[in-house]
Amino acid sequence: MPNPSPTDAIVIGAGPVGLWTVFELGLLGMRCTVIDTLSGPGGQCAALYSDKPIYDIPGLPVVTGDGLTQALMRQVKPFDPQFHWQAQVSELQLKDGLWHLCAQATGSKKAGHYAARCVFIAAGVGAFMPKTPSLEGMNDLLGRDIFFEIPPVDRFFDGQQVCVLGGEQEAVDSALALLDAPCRLDITLMHRRDVFRADAATLARLERAKSEGRIRCQVGQPTRLLMGNSAKQSLTGLEIDTPHAGLGSLSCQILLIAQGLSPKLGPLSTWGLQMSRKQLVVEPATCATSASGIFAVGDIVDYPGKKKLIVSGFHEATQAAFAAASILRPQDNGPLQYTTSSTLLQKRLGILE
Image (cartoon, rainbow, N blue to C red; front, side, top):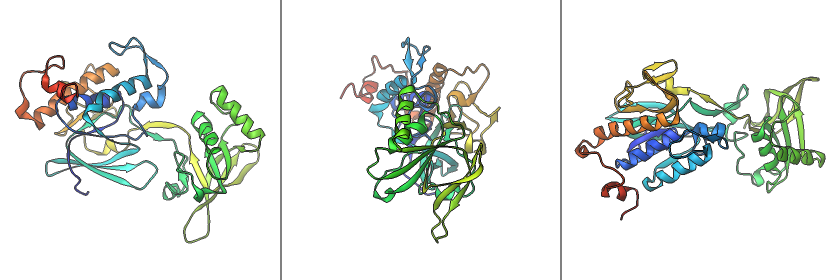
């Protein structure tokens, strides 16, 4: 792998526990890079219950997943962490005393390379990745003809046939959003059933768009990509399996996959770290894994008495940050400092100049 400029710590995962890890590391004077497979912070809170209430966060009688995420983002802001979204760490290697990571961009062949003295794995129940159909040759078209999010729509797409694949809120929202594109698009929304799951207002907009002929709905599932015969292989359509007519075809040059997200352990299981029941084994006092300089916190870890609660993850992040500080900044080991009275900590928080 290339040799990027190293930072103090890399945090894998930007859920609540990952963000609290960034906060604790910042208080201890360490610079952080954060990598997450999603397009923004929040992890499981954002992906599964952004608008649902949480009742067991200390000092907050009730807060939504989104509200907690935004509050944590405000807390880490003074430390200026570098965030890299829609990227999954695929490789982890120790080289010359630094951990080197390669992160593959979601839906693309592009990769980023990072290095740090310590790594914190806050991957929750796994990396949230797009649910995808099993279609031969799909990877070759990612980022060109096949997308997981609406790409920048310009004149290049003018007159193109677009198929949005999915049957829930994300898919319906995406199809409706394409109606506002600055170019002409022929839009088909395809789902395996003739029922879509979205809020009432969204479904009403979809029905209006259908009645006006601006969106077509197709019941079926893609079974094969149809490709052109030119030297540059490009998407021309889909072979689809329909419930009543059997195999058929649908013309499209752009496929937008919006079938939601699912957590996957992914490459983490190949990094040689000790695991138990698909979780990382850590030392409870430090949350250190079996590899020196790699720590793990949150739902991804296992130890005797472990409780899968956000508040438990906050405690683990604090323990891990102090353990890392003893490695990276042994000269700073001294009396425990408190944000209420420490001039140093208040300067790091931006409260004092």
